[in-house]
Length: 507
Image (cartoon, rainbow, N blue to C red; front, side, top):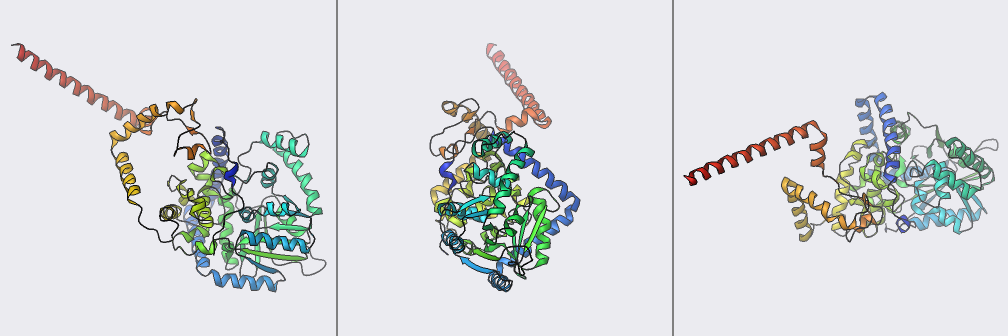
């Protein structure tokens, strides 16, 4: 399918990220990694690795037979009383949802947290059409009030402090909001309860779609998902075609992987299984159910035998938590709905390299993301593949890099492989940065380095790793002592030799 640019480009509003942001982000992600490790340890490493491999295999199997499972899904959803729509791109998905809303004279809608709806800019389209649309996930509700996009796949308001949220509630809601999490939750709960009861349409995504029965699986921790999908008389779900899984056994595996990796829980507080609309007057649930199956570039991703494994992702967000780049720049610096390593891979392929070709380079290639990924996506391999595609002009089969680029790469490789040259470069940087340094930061750099400082300041170069190693580790100190001893011996030898030569000349 034709690649289309997302309606939302968050980079248009990116300002300098405050220096305190990395510390705030790392506090949150470190906590998530700690709770994740605790619940993984309960499973045991051998069992966890078996689950990861099973998750990888069943997701890859589904992608390789996507046409079969999507056709089966459509058949089962229709048999359950639902209505299935196919959307080739973001604009078509928006139009389908708007037409459904107009047909039912919807004026107010409530939403479950959905990255697919963020991807296509659905909120903006509904609001522009005069439909009051409210996010009901607490994090999404907060960033909607702040007129921002999510900074994390799982925790949209990860970048905000409780003090900042209290100020936001006071400014936007006109209430006395103390910086207390419990009090802030109660304020949001009171506001949202009214919206659940008044909305004519509930909008959701889905974590998985079970082809065997046409069932949507929605995982939440706040209960808002069930309110949005049962109280309004109309339920519309917008879901990427990559979210389909074959059967209930597959879901059983994935539901062991997802909550542990996402929030460090054995299972989420609410796991909802939705199969069509209600079938009897006394049943709960909506009178009408619509499923919008979203492509928006996903079939194009399938053309690359390597990069297609991006679509194995179950949106747990653990790759963000462990990524050193994400932990230093935050989610908004990536510029689009998806951030972190999954954003670097997925956004580049959804939008094409002319729009998002810089994202595959937003990685240190340390490999921690692949090590933590619950479905074993080969993230580093895919990022390298996408970098080659950027150089090759977005061709799926990468071409050989241009000669100048290969020459620069060889020069860089040589500089990093020669110790004295590396150390000379790190020392030279300390002097080269002086015209641009303000306190401990480099807020503005000349091209091409300003591509970084347009998003956030760069930490000043105060020490290189080798220097830090020598000063802070026993092995480094021993090596430094040996070097000094060796230098002392060499100097003593030179002086002794000079003394001998001088004494002979004197005679």
